[in-house]
Image 1 (cartoon, rainbow, N blue to C red):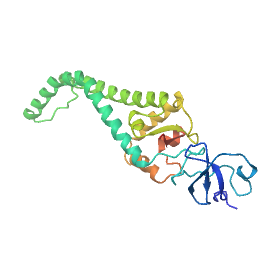
Image 2: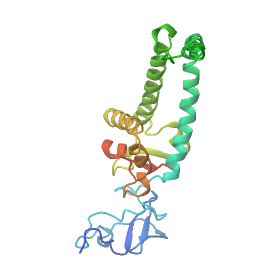
Image 3: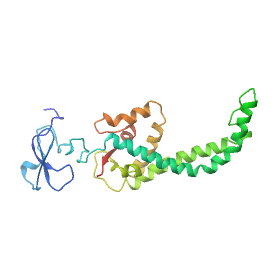
Amino acid sequence: MSENQNPPMGWYPDPAGSTQERYWDGNSWTNNLRPTYVSQQNQPQTGYGYTSYPQVAASGGPTTADGVPLAGWWSRVGASIIDGFILGFALNILLIPFSMGMGPGFARWLEDVDTSLNTPSPLDPQYGIAGPFVAMTLVSVLLSFAYGFLMLRFKGATLGQMALGIGVVPTDNGRATGGLTWGKAALRQCTYLIIGQIPIVGLVSYLMPLWTQKRQTFHDMIAQTQMVRTR
């Protein structure tokens, strides 16, 4: 038989996380529960083309290999919006000194644009705009990296993800706790920021959880992570 064939009907550990067993009807999880007990017929059966319990959540959606429901696409979108507001607020405060430093030079540049036959470059050293602009860019990139990196390392989720009950775990290890490793957190956040700046590729990556089996984006695949529901 094909290795992707559904396992047979039977009682299995509840993928919703309870201490009971839930009945699998051969195609989807039912609402029937019973106390857990171990018997030969409850063990994963071989010869049916599978070696683990059915990987479909009790609600009908996909799960990690250990039965944790995957995060939905709209939850990911909502979390990104919340994180965008949080980062935007923080950056608006941190970048005030740089913006004030650029003000006089920017005003002089606008005056020269109105009076000159040839439009001057705003990065001309005489305006003093280039330095503050580069500093603002560096602060924005570093804060965006540090926010995602540290939250994923220590919490396994950003503030937006925590607010919507989702988190990031190693691929097929949905019950992992304590956040990602230093390496995974850094790799995921770096690739997330880089891919997001590439036209078309960033958009495709953003939409990929809608059709990929494990609901992964490009940066999820590279860092070997998945997003799961935490409540």
